[in-house]
Length: 276
Image (tube, rainbow, N blue to C red; front, side, top):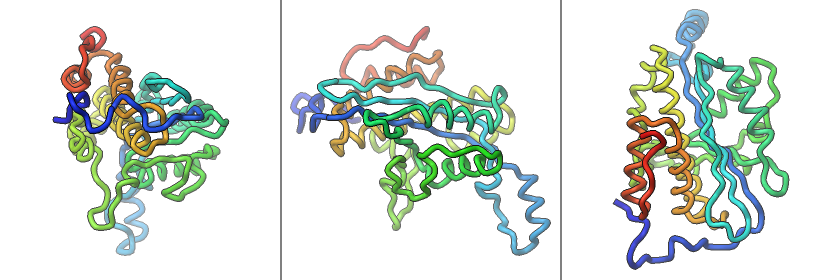
């Protein structure tokens, strides 16, 4: 277990590496998908043996999206400003509703201190999420926000945490794999089980999985920015602020697990989740 409050730390974890001169904002997002197997079968029937036998992201329909906006204020500010964890999900919203809301009300509105668009942060978004968002824009005639117009994996308006640690030798790590290596709790349910809940329409399970992935990605992204000296808040302070905010959600076994982890690892007593 990693304890962030050591008696004799190698370096004071409460002291930021550098002063931050400009407000910075990131939008951390994750999406879940239902694969349209009928469309894929039609493609295979039409193209025969030249068709790709396994359905790929071109046949994925967005059924859920979660995001959180994090602002890192300039100056001597100890904690980031963490917005509410939002989820856009079926059956209340379909694919185009989810994408239109995310583009128009989030990515196009959130900016840094210099007026530039907020960075879009994800785990492996370059490999699937971003591509499906572009596919939806093409299909429905929606204008892409600036964060998604550049398809380069190293676009400065995006931060893909999986890509940051990609290795040709082993490929990309799984989100839960990297999180476990940092002694963070894992996903709400094993990733392999999610599709059966999507097919069955268990949207509460899908929503919590998606929001939980956003929390894990947000913690890792904030720690990475702090480690690189890009923000004035420490990784410890960012972790605490994000977990505090997530535990304001309606109580479930998953939020209670995070509340226990928070109490055991962040070095101070904190109330359990709201209503828990």
